[in-house]
Amino acid sequence: MIKKILCAVDDTEYSKAAIAVTAELAKATDAKVTFLAVNQLLGGYGHGGVSTYIWDSATMKRVLSDATVAAKKAGVKESNTVDVKSRDIGRAIVVFAEENDIDHVVVGTGGKSAISRLMLGSISSDVLARAHCPVTVARLHK
Image (cartoon, rainbow, N blue to C red):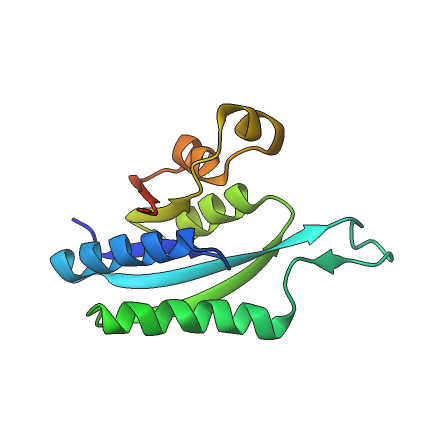
């Protein structure tokens, strides 16, 4: 039984597909939804040096707010938001899911080519391979 769904969101169109799938799952199971945004650390290691993140706090708040508004419009009854900072986005999603007893994870995918995945990695593939629970990978329909 699905009681808690984790939906990883970011500032891309692919999050819209993940939010839509999450809303359908939540409505079908009456599950509580957590929207998670991972602010990726770029460069420095934070040891006295300068740490640079992809998003500023205003962007992070907007990304999470947009997710909850879209989910509410789609009929999600209960949701909350969480933001974390990490160098490894996929690992951060998996660790959060494990630590919070999440029953199901939803991530979006950009449909990268095989070469792009090899060079850049794939967060959705990483989560799918490492998660302790079922994972749904939502693709944006164009």
